[in-house]
Image (cartoon, rainbow, N blue to C red; front, side, top):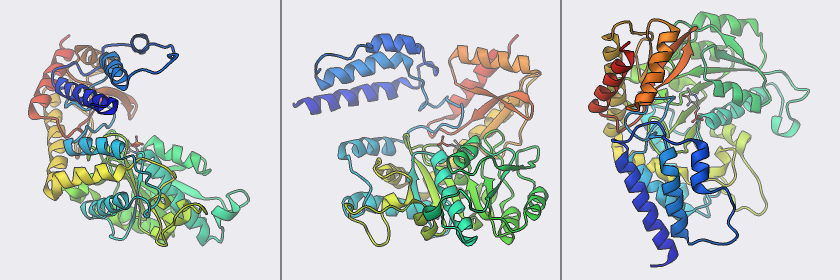
Length: 454
Ligand SMILES: *Cc1c(COP(=O)(O)O)cnc(C)c1O
């Protein structure tokens, strides 16, 4: 066996052992950064080492410092796991090592991206013919879509941003719900648009249509972008799309939807009502590495008018071999990047239409079970309307909620983070992993009950 094959074989064995350990191991990492640095060794070696030894050292030294993110009892932030076909496809992506810039040079990549893109539009009920760019995550998908929107609204005002830049041009107003995700603000910062104007949201974080109408009316005819949200990270709530998009369109605004995890509601007949009206927007950001459960990293930037996306992200290079209708690189900020669409194709091919719907419904069912279980604990209260995959709970006072969270983490059965929502500390549960079972939910609820025992 040559050195490369031996290294790959070791990597396979370590990966299989890691995945097999997920159900039994404590969810939090057991070792500190310093301990892992010590185990890896901080000295740069003077000379080469055999690849398989390097793989062995990496796997054994890092193992205690790994968090069981891809296991069934990780409910922090919004974190998906790794669906088996997608994980295996991701290994091929590394072995194939395709440069995905141009259609002409990797026909296989372009084909997978075309197919996965059209399947996504179908499943998410978005306009066929929209452009789908494969980004690192929803943060960069927000950036990409809002870049297309910024340039489009300024073009309508007679400004060519690609040629003339922003300085000296008309100001762009950006209206956002006050409970938007912080990556929207970050995208606006990168795009030179500064701070957005927050519009009032209701007790579940949904933008208030009348407040949006009033804010739009106050702006006269200035170029405007409205950012809506499908899936609030605390409540899981969805903005009222039909009404707000109608209002925004009447004001000639570009409408972008941040649907990092919530856009997937559209793939389930049972939850599709949550995204009603959403397809009328101009652009949508979502993640494949959350609800669809492909490995990191993969976000999706979807823009109704492909020409608007290409105007913002298109590239020219005399040394490139460019396709008249645009290349994969013309839909994303990067030039070279990883073949992310292969992994998305594999997840969708493996799950099929019914599998994606069933995945969304299962995540929601587990969230409902968490809410019911927590409501039965003395002194505990679920503070959001559980409409999708997110549950927030408090335990009588901020201090007690903190204590319950700390005990739960020390217990190790599950990983759940705290947050501050509507002025108080909450336990925030996000069910996003394909492999979470009823048994995982039962075990986690038992751990929460133990953490509550004073
Ligand atoms: C996770 C999330 C993001 C950011 O996504 P990344 O993939 O981490 O870049 C943006 N918006 C919402 C609503 C999210 O949940």
